[in-house]
Image (cartoon, helix red, strand yellow):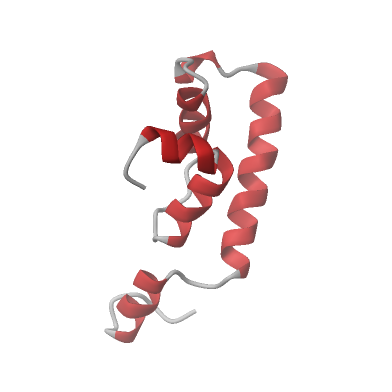
Amino acid sequence: MESAEQLRALGPDAAYAKLLAAGTKPHFIGYYALVMGLQGRPWTDCQGAEKAALRKRFDAIKAESTKKGRSEIEAALNFLGVVPKA
């Protein structure tokens, strides 16, 4: 992606899934900061039921990313012997 408009068009869930596929380690705060930022809100604005709902979405994205196996970078590092084999 090259612009904020492209990121907004993709949406936070698909964008975060792409980050995970690229090898980024999953982190809930990073995910909900992305969601809040795309809404023009400070990341600290996320609380209560909204935060719980975002946690469910995050967990689903994370689970889906692990179904696909290791990312390409992890596979390459594994091939080189840097990452322990799964």
